[in-house]
Length: 433
Image 1 (cartoon, one colour):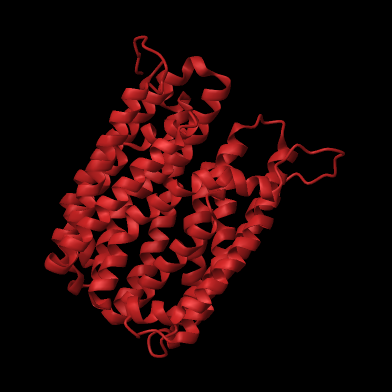
Image 2 (cartoon, helix red, strand yellow):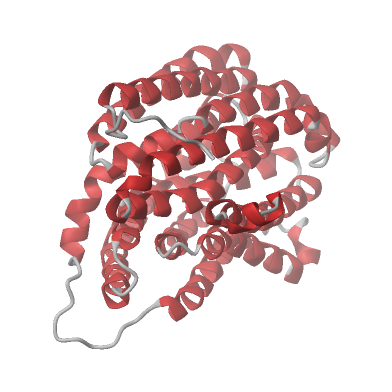
């Protein structure tokens, strides 16, 4: 059998490749939208839009209380003939998130004056900021549908819904209002309505994968049961998000909107490696879950194959991006090239973060989430302390250094705990293909 045939017969490699293609489609679209923003708007206004994107993403994640992680775990663990049970899990998740989204929209509305003063430095209209709260519900819809598809092992569709749909919607609205985009400061409002549009479209994408025929008894968790089961998973999502974005928040807190724009562009470029990681996540995690529950004899082999794949791929991507750092920044505008050192530090930080991906999965699969939560909490504390010490003194390079220090700490502790708890639960010799 030729090498090409072996590759084509390896479902992990093929699905990872397809997922990466889908991820890069979303990356390209998101970068296009960001380039339009940085090229057409001044740096301060671009910083406002980027900070709003961060707040919508972060607050909506908090409002989901770990439901997205629970959906993947619940749906991927079910056998293929449980279509109705999977569908009811999604529907009940909608019901739960409708309630939590409303609560956080209310909190957003009340806190808007403080958010505007503290993080936007009064460079966004209060009414626009309050209107943005509506997008929380629709962003939750996008993410929930994406994670449901991920649980169905439809990695490419999941990635496209989460990344491509919002970007397509934003670019479409920018195109429709092109003549007024630059002059009338429509960037904020167009972003809000693009999330609403993408949320609606995501429902149509997931509809063909639902089975809602009435049946006498469906063994699916109620919204309240989903709430109880999702709470232990919430800290993982919260900590992971804050680990990625607390630096931008701290830059926004200590520095002006121009610095937010600079740091956001460098961070966005560094996240290209995380898009690779996300594509692998969408492919590896559901399969790892399925193998653990149904083919445990293959667990060790698959785990180490996946780990080698993640580390090797991310190492190559990091080296390539380090070589292209200057030109990647120049695409956004020559004034953004000044963030080159920041980008280099962030690229190294993201590589270290990637090395612990598969090890983290095993904590969730083995129901040892409390250990992972503790490590993530400690890492978050380290990140905050480093930001407080470094950002006021070194600016955006200090924020990037805080990320690097934290990611090295996080990866080392996770691997040490993984080995000490023997989460693969076997000592036999591992054969890696």
